[in-house]
Length: 424
Image (cartoon, rainbow, N blue to C red; front, side):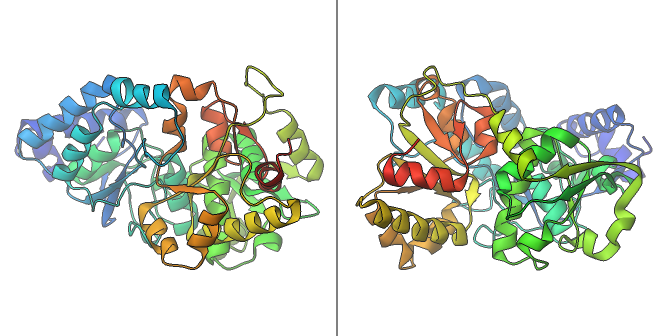
């Protein structure tokens, strides 16, 4: 790797031993991927994936403290993934005991470290940091140092920023020195599509299901998706962006996609069209039968496969304001149809704190509350990491949550039927 004089000086200790170690780590990381150089981070804010104060993460807290003790602060303010606990989310005495005494025992301590290092504000805890209500939305072409997979794929694809799928802690190290290794999705060549996915469904495909199918097929490659614009349009409005948020999260968690192009919709696809497709790209056709095949092959890991659901999580990644409104309308309609007054299964809708604050100002908030639904800023995945929660029959329409936990996946319309009339 070729370093500039300034970069070499940091590596040699010109800005202190701590930054020298950080720079050495980034250089070794870049060398592992045969990066030719380091490039400057250009985004206004960073985003960190480590938001949770797990007791076993003591090396992270030690590292953060070394950085703070050395007087080093982040070159950028940053947002961070969602908090792992919320007293409003249903949990029994033993589950709460595990959360508070055995799992997230360092939460307050770690949040204090985050604030000292450069947290944007008290509400900057969300995996959807790019939403207007959170305020961390990179511009097209910005170079980032992010690690949260669902945020990385959204920033690359929908916003046209440039970021590799970094690991946790690498995200903050890039921010500390202001550089990241130049390889992969930072390069023009690395952003070319090696798969052409043709969507040939007879109706709008479920975002989480379509993303899952593509992620499992292309893995870490870049797909160019044709035919989806007929269902979600050619404008990046709130509806399309909400769809792509969920779609991308599924491609990133069910595979390892860090960038996708949607014909006639995402920035680079609109600008460059099919010139984004690499020579020799493979083809994958998705029709109704293929989506049904994918869903039918999801494993059910519940101890009792026919158990009645005890909890429902919606919002992994966090829901948008429009999605909260849409779920309110749909749940009310479902309850009216079934003759129920409230949801028959405890249901939690999660969203960023800033999104929830805006939602609470609308006439939708009391309507949703009247249905018995709970709103929260929590990370459902962190909730499900509790061994006593893991054994519960939990349902979700999130393919990310299904992939990383014991939660069972259902499409949105299936979820709606289950929570409003107790269907299975």
